[in-house]
Length: 321
Image (cartoon, rainbow, N blue to C red; front, side, top):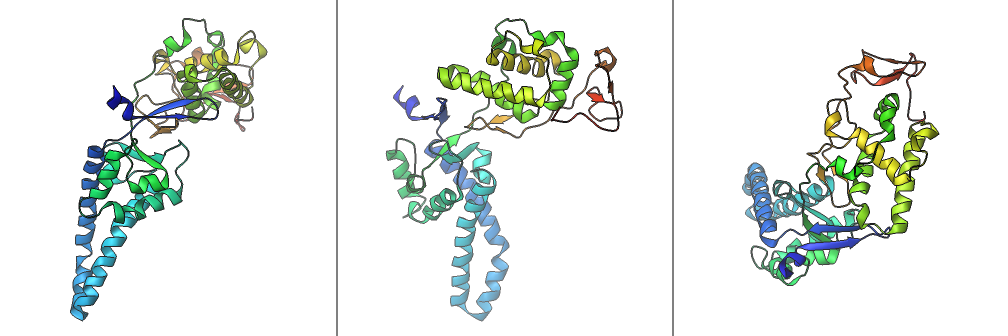
């Protein structure tokens, strides 16, 4: 039990949201480092030709150039990869581990730079012995570079497709009575918005009451602002139930063939709920003509998103609708 707790990092945000991150074990990090070392050795082999040229001029110059190139590749490779690949190197990506801020905040460049500069110390005297000892003694498996920079390395988890019907708890969805409004929601609500709403519903039990009310109030206001909906759609509904209704009509197995500008169930979810590797699902309806159209609206068959309700040319309905 204690071992399981040691592998978990709990982060509590000011809004009352609690996240549990799975810490990457020292062995997993070592395996990722081996992959990165192989990449660096391949790169060194590629520049060995230039080292041989400098050896013709001077052996000392060749040795100095070799040390300089090795240092730049070792540190530069990790710094560039972790900054541009969101806390991952090629080795970390293969083993699905990631460097993150220990408080759940966005990783800063100064943290990336500091933790990698201290690799020089962590790697002493050989094969990261100092860093390995530090990780074994640390509650969060942090080497000296992590402790100084305020970072941890986590194991990314694969999340299964959520059961939307369970989230709805068997309640009737009033949006089902307005198919043309569902089409309008699919057109105007972005995948990122649906992803945030779904994350809020999945984590709502972890929220404090005040934070829960505020979050769903903000989400509901954002949706109403993006899509002009009649009062009858959300009359008598709480903000949380309204958001739940929207997610249910945009993201259900039954409607998967219709369109979901929502979350891909195979996507990877980052620690702070950010959806990575998002793939947009094309908006397709089997029978566009079966949708009840509002006056002034029609189906644009030439649009690649076949079946999305579009207004008459030349202007299309935008997010400000």
